[in-house]
Image 1 (tube, rainbow over the protein chains, first blue to last red):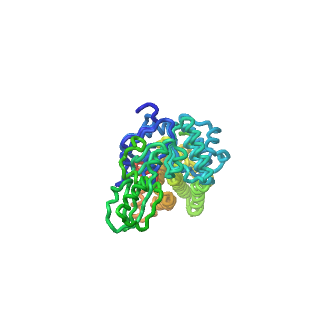
Image 2 (tube, rainbow over the protein chains, first blue to last red):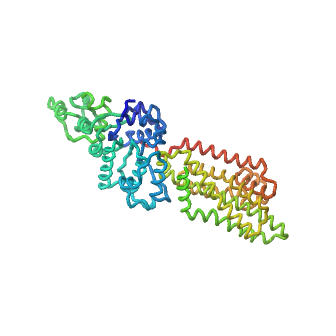
Image 3 (tube, one colour):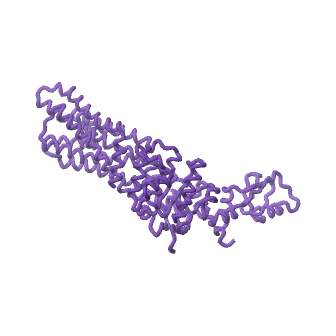
Length: 301
Length: 248
């Protein structure tokens, strides 16, 4: 593992019964990077996060700053906000935060931690009396308590309002400036775009695109052409078409070159009833990425 | 680990209902049973025997309830995601389980001591000092079997089911194990059933101590065997049952 590698994942596979949630995934992150794991629900993002934390049985290798997941967690190398993490009832915020701080080999000074996580004024509160956004901030404080060099966040802003999100990402940028490696799973393209300096698109348990936000957006800025056709054409081979789908008579083509695709479709004076052209959603874009080769975007295109 | 221990103890201390049901209730039962039924005793020796027996039963009942009750929290902590959260902190899972055992065992002490005090001070039970000490010590150690059972239930069942299961389990173990009505009064078949329950053997530990002989090897092995079985099953559940919803 080259120096400066915060996270090294090789051939990671996670199966739940017959379902393969992560399928031979490779990913290396450099120290100090802010990385978005982007993908639709069920893509395997959470499972990757859980495997890095040693929460799910997996095959392949995961090294966090050179350590196994369990050793990294014990050493306080990794802090995490889980999607299904929670706080203990019948306790106060201060007690929970202090419990985790004291269990860490290093610990973030309480006064500073409270300001960074935005939980000032909450320390005396019973955990059961917190709002959704407040709980998330307490969970952030727990993740940061050990001043971890690697921070894993699984859909961290899902319970936050707009104001809360803005404050949250401001904090994340400040942490990144301090050299913390921040990895967050999200299905919001905008969030990945605004915060991450590297976007890794995950679909079907694999990395289907990897690059800067601009590179990934360029790669997935496809458009969808839909129309009705009763003939059985061979659509997949048309210029620009990256994915084709038929539902009854409704044909739906994903293309990275609308003009070329339309010209080819209309060649020979064919009629295209109910023609529509629109921007591809992230879901469709990721689907189109999955059906393509696994060459990382920005590598050689 | 001491931080976690203090933390968990503080949480349980906030639960007043728990203290009521595990300390006050068996203490009141001890007085009630002894005053109502002990009054019918003819000779003083007969009263002593009755008062001692019902005190031992209620000590066992209180400790059993406390041990099981202390561990309901585990199913809540599992459901809330707190156990999962703890797993991503440097707190070791083994420490979490060890603290749960320690807290459970510590919480059986108040019921044991309070019921013993009520037996001595209110009902006038007379035993040598060494027997009092031995009785509390033996029942305290034996309560580990029910802490293990509580851990098993807490880790196996959903939070909504665990509370009810533990309540029913407590009642069944107390009633069929002869803690409320002595097994001598049971019909033959029920008595045979009682002999398969940990609660019977647990109270038997106490009865053997107050009889002055010290616990019999068979009784110790029976309670230890139940404790070991529950502990092993808990370990299996901890290993097998994921701490999270299985999802993408």
